[in-house]
Amino acid sequence: MTQSADAEAPRTSFLAEVKGAVTPRATLLVIGAVALQLLFIASYVGALHDPKPKDVPFGVVAPQVAAEQAVTRLERLPGSPLDPRAVTDAATARDQVLNRDIDGALIINPAGTTDTLLVASGGGTVLATTLEAIVTTLEKAEQRTVRAIDVAPASTEDFDGLSSFYLVVGWCVGGYLCASILAISSGARPASPRRAVIRLLVMALASIVGGLGGAVIVGPVLGALPGSVAALWGLGALITFAVGAATLALQGIFGIVGIGLAILLVVIAGNPSAGGAFPLPMLPPFWKAIGPALPPGAGTWVARSIAYFKGNDTTGSLLVLSAWAAAGIVITMGAATLRRKRAAG
Picture (cartoon, rainbow, N blue to C red):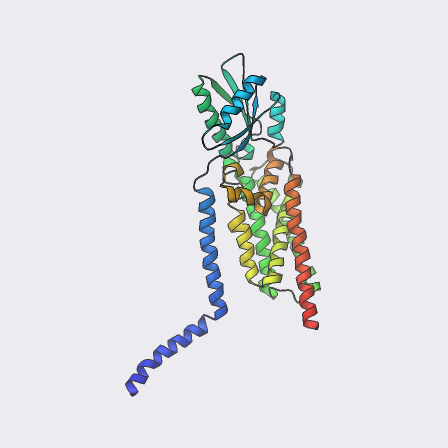
């Protein structure tokens, strides 16, 4: 009997150690971490493992009958890689590419056998080369040739047009890391509206500094991106604050779990759908749909517009980022106010 009791004692002691080392709260957090890990894999691989162009906005310039025939031919391509539409003339097609209304345009020469393809590698080198490959194959089948003109070329220091994306990713990381540090250092949920205001002000100051630093690094220091340093600074401050305020809001509602939810939104859902590695028309439908509504996607679009498209077509994406910032402020303050009222009651 004594030997049996002694044999059982270490087993009971070990179970007690497990319960002490891994609390129920820690268990739930570990399960959440594993879930985020699997979602990360599913999101990145799902979005990026098999990029294919789908309904890429594409212009066709030609005499009316020839334009209609070309549009019909392009519409019937297997897999619907292009969304073609007739454009009145070459100048209009060029303007539409620079305004980011279309991603490319074919200018058909009725008097010869060499046509012109307009692309914009500043909007994504992979998409530009894909359009060139599609059109070259089609032209060869018609015994015609094509010359490509890059109307908004990516910088030679901006490999594959990725610098804008990585710049925005850095600003997003700064946003949720700063907000997370504020939570970890003094509690995920601010104890009062005053403390919530202080956290938001600290987040704003960090965003201004981080925005300027990022703009200077990719511009004057590395020469990776052209465009206005001041415009990129403003964009960086807005992105960083939008992500930081949203993270503070999620922490105000869900506590420390809010950090994981911020990672879910920004890193797991936002980064692969941002149109960075592959522009939006090459992403699967789900990621293509959510990308423009999340900070990484909205930020990448604006950064590329500033760098290569003279700041065209940025209003919608800036409104998205502003909405994230405004919602973060309102929810952070609202959660702190409700908590204070409950404590007082």
